[in-house]
Image (cartoon, rainbow, N blue to C red; front, side, top):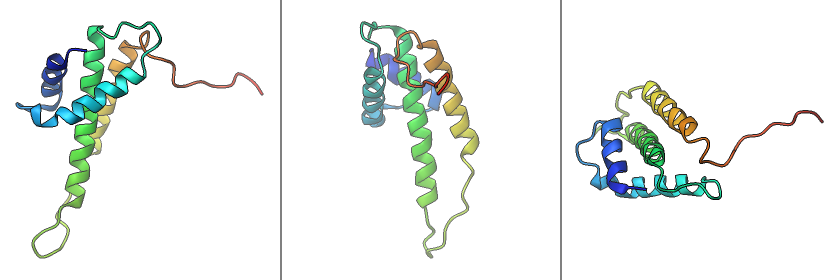
Length: 116
């Protein structure tokens, strides 16, 4: 996967100008996507860059939501918290879109029993 492209796409998805400080987050997303590849899948397929960037974006949004929940004022009281649910859902939908786009490259992770 092209790391520069993933960083560019992550910047596009997140609105960040500089994503280099999030390189560990990007690397974790790349490893997560690579671990889910089917045997014989083309690891250089450009769609996987979009998927890795979407995974990074979701983790970024979740991380920011968690950070905000932990903030406290100087007096020790909890600050007014924003509801990050819409941003998390949007990031999850973006990830779902790119996961579906890459479905032929990824192993099936869900199954169901037809009968018992």
